[in-house]
Image 1: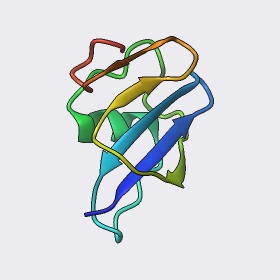
Image 2 (image 1 turned 120 degrees about the horizontal axis):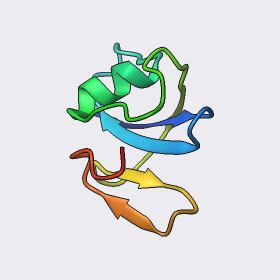
Image 3 (image 1 turned 180 degrees about the vertical axis):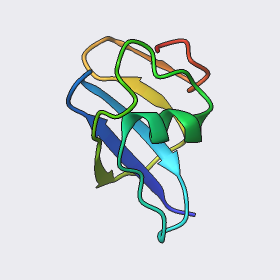
Image 4 (image 1 turned 90 degrees about the vertical axis):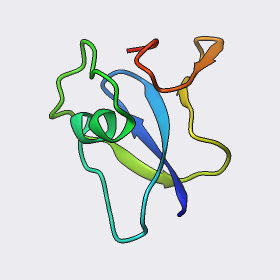
Length: 75
């Protein structure tokens, strides 16, 4: 399955999610649910923008200087 990057402008976070090409996640809540993590302080209805990505399944906080596994440690 392809790996996609989703960017949430509301919180500045970019996450990478592996899913079928036919699926498209539209909100931060959908992304968090797919990763099995809590949406944190960001409202789940906030929109996300999909970009083609590569690499492993990670949650990255751009500019925060760290990467975590998507287990909610950053949320």
